[in-house]
Length: 204
Image (cartoon, rainbow, N blue to C red; front, side):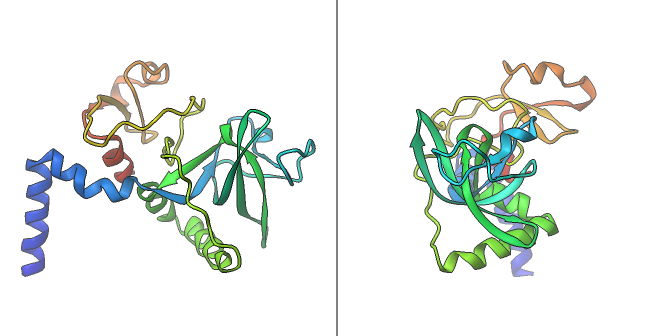
């Protein structure tokens, strides 16, 4: 009974105080050492043995979960050093930053809800003992399900700043009103909200 009352109190606080809701969800917006690879063209998801290598050694699948070991600037571009699962083997390599999206804690919780991804996550974590993960210093700007065309990274706005977003209830993606993808959403699947970015990510 006490637990039920506590839950009801928390829900009432979240409903009555958006600022408090932002405070409570702040930890969910923190970066974690995991990300997903995504590109419309699968050949863009190439993995290299080093940032100087010209020939790819492997290729990831779309939305593949990877552990982030570090970042590196090379040739005027950002690269991620990653650890990933290929078949039954755990491999490492480098992938270009324009097709790799760091996750927040909320994003990681969302994707890990999938049983297969959850198993991959366990394997990657078990490998971390020999080579500890390095947290990404930069604030993440990607969602667990990035839009088809990656956009330039910008500094994330404070969680207290509320923007208007256009939701696609079918694909579970959200966009800024001036995004070209937002114009393509059918009226049946279109919804607008003033919830914070972190809250939307936490909701999946």
